[in-house]
Length: 176
Image 1 (cartoon, helix red, strand yellow):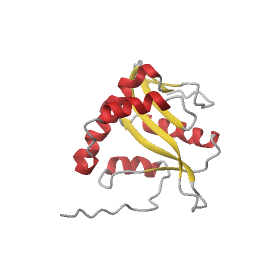
Image 2 (cartoon, one colour):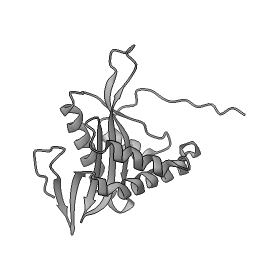
Image 3 (tube, one colour):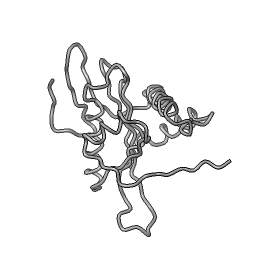
Image 4 (cartoon, one colour):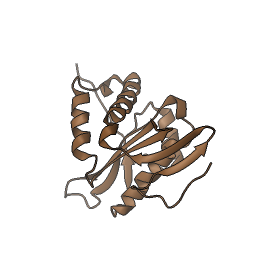
């Protein structure tokens, strides 16, 4: 496996194993279908873990609009992992700004991370996250946060290996 340095958002990272050539690249407008496909797959999986993560009927149109509006915006990061020019991973991140009541109110939030079944365990998730860390530092932000479904032990394992720690829990009570 080869890893070309330095990492930057604009320059693809090439990694090679077996017959696959993997690049981590910023998603472009013509990648919209791949973004939608991967985000949909992520949420089908999350919905299987917890029905409250089901997407709205119009989610696809909303995501396409969001992507078109923000894929080049400096406060958003849309990355694809591509093997042989086929999308096999997705990372969506954005700068989050909390209420001015809080001292530590700016961070990068990883909004979605997904790797296809065929490429899990190959390091794509880590490479996508590394790009998000680099991007956060380029934005002058020292913190990356994300949400993970409580029953998604596979994702929790990846995030723990990456140094993420649980700092709060979201508790839910269903009424009626």
